[in-house]
Image (cartoon, rainbow, N blue to C red; front, side, top):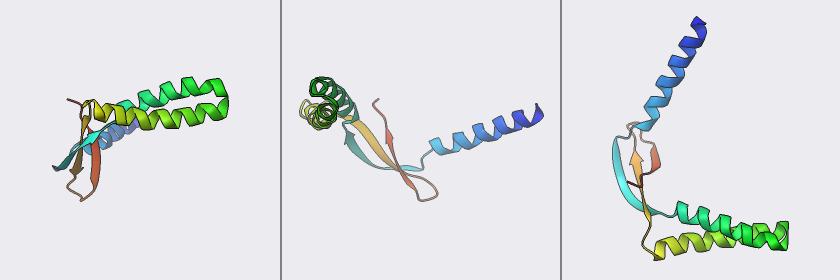
Length: 95
């Protein structure tokens, strides 16, 4: 039981360190929501044509979903951050 508590503490402390960023390098637009919604709708419509139609429909839907979200001006914010170790990460922050 003592080993489990130590393992839990080590894992929780290692997970906490990855959420911090030293600075925000730049802000970009993110259309992940539109792409996923468009891909799902395209997959459902393309499923009429079978498995191949489903894959093609999902790809086309994802392309048009991201474009539609950008054209409507509903893009979300995404920040590229630089950590203290020099590594850069992209973080999504809708609010």
